Amino acid sequence: MMTTLTDHLIVDGARVAYREGGSGEPVVFIHGTPSHSYEWREVVPHVEAAGHRTLTYDLLGYGLSERPAHRDTSVAAQSDLLGQLLDALGLDRVSLVAHDIGGAVALRFALAYPGRVRRLMVMDSVSYDSWPSATWRRIIDEDLDDHAAMPQEAFDDLLTRQLTMTVADKSLMTGDVLRAYLAPHASRLGRASFFEHQVRHYDSRYTEEITDRLGGLTLPVRILWGAEDEWQPVRYAERLRDDIPGAELVVIPGAGHFLMEDAPGRVVREVIDFLASGGEEDTEGSPGPAR
Image 1 (tube, one colour):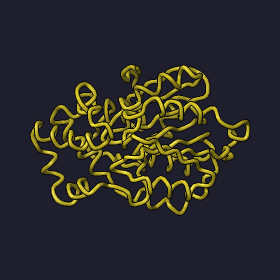
Image 2 (cartoon, one colour):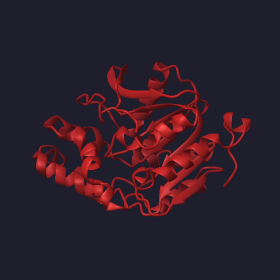
Image 3 (spheres, rainbow, N blue to C red):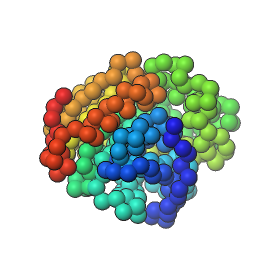
């Protein structure tokens, strides 16, 4: 299992928590919401063992990274921050493995800096007009500040209901695993940060504005999706596949939105296979072979 993030860097004036491991071709893991880098714990060690240098980090405002007041933590701002983080760590060209809102961060980054991304895998990504969900949209539109001030027990109940929806096997989101997802918000600051740095920035304009540019992606792309995703239906995965030239789509049966919880072994195999696929053409940004 991957260890907790213990390293920190100041990036654009804010502290970012991260972890590096392994050696070889670098691959960056970008988590989603409501989450943090904990979601990659069953995946990253196997990718390192397969011969890759890994970078896992908490998005700004998430997990162990800083939660600066009034800071833009939208997927657009997170994409800009990713470039600065890579610069600080001396990483010029990387592969990206990204989930949920992390997928939007990665897609925006690949479009803005195509020469810096070797391969891209997106998992159950927000896209087009797929987000926010009806629940989050109501909270944003009607009473975001009231929710930010709710008592801990009420907040835990709310987030537990949402987290339970992320897995097909509901028994997986219980006990220590559930507590780990709830942990970053187990304080008044944590609760306020969740609404200020995550929910407030759930906005489909950041994905809708890049729709017409997806056809310009020329790097190898694999789309991994849980067949039973309750938040991001498979039809969005199919649309991404059709809009991104040469993109592959792999739908995992029996998995939900957090497919790394429902099917960690399958996710590991897909990531390692994707990173190893193709020849020299792939390293120059050409599409890999179709599956």
